[in-house]
Image 1: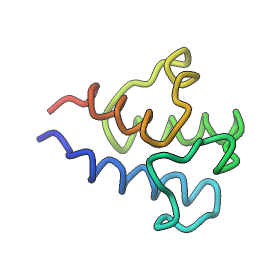
Image 2: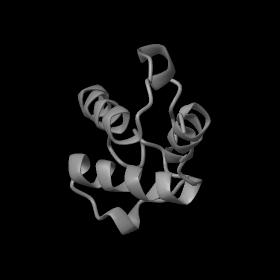
Image 3: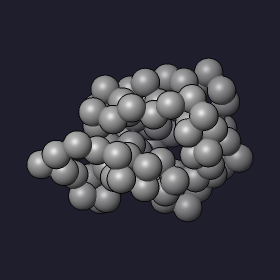
Image 4: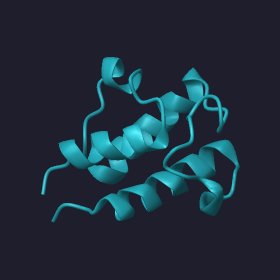
Length: 83
């Protein structure tokens, strides 16, 4: 069964929280991954890998580069998840 955007947001916040050592409840959909959360290319690779595992989606490198905000990632996962 496909996850709701809220469930994806919560799971993604957990992954980002673990990688970036920020509280999950402080992560919002409108935050920029790089500018607001300090995600660099190495951290992004880890987050993408973990998101692929957690949500069962494939995030190609060229798509990962388009994920600027947390909401961008939520939208991509939501659209590409298989039920």
